[in-house]
Picture (cartoon, one colour):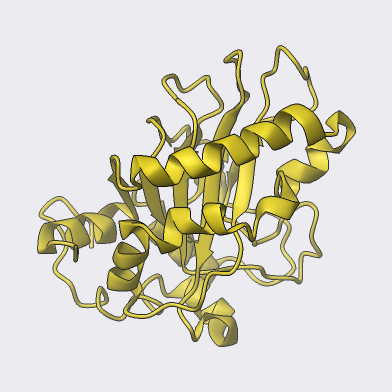
Length: 255
């Protein structure tokens, strides 16, 4: 179902939409056991740091039942509605926050950042950006201390201004100081809940103090022209969102 005018205005203001139960239970029931089996039988504790930087269960990233969480759900419809059109999605990132009680100290908190920009494990000159992040919860996240992702509503506007006026390719800082000090809003929910977040919204991830792993499948969605204009898209938050560029903001928007 297409987004309403109000939902589009909210996304323009906050850079985030949260859609409860957007992915049908029959889709999550197919995906969850795949990841659970991998975690119980194939997780190499010595590789948790590397998994955290890239993806857990890399061999499942192209599995049909994982990709279906996006491709066969309304998430794909909403993404296309926001971007107008999008490049094919061929892989998923599986992110697991392991219980601190089982693997103490091996998966530190992730500070505020924007994906693919000045990543500690990448060359500062390299950009791995995209347009829209879609996250599908695959485990209960009831408490911010359960390794929840935390995002800064409206931070996409702050980041675009910073990228325009103060940042240049090669700078190793991921966000400006005022963003780095932000705590953010935790994304809590149940399997099937979906986060749609503008690429420029800064976010962080805390330790998982729950006794079970926190699992989310992420899909990085790009406008077909994004790769040819990555730097411009960092400076103009609506370049990849032509339908939103002139959309009316909500009354409390700063725009």
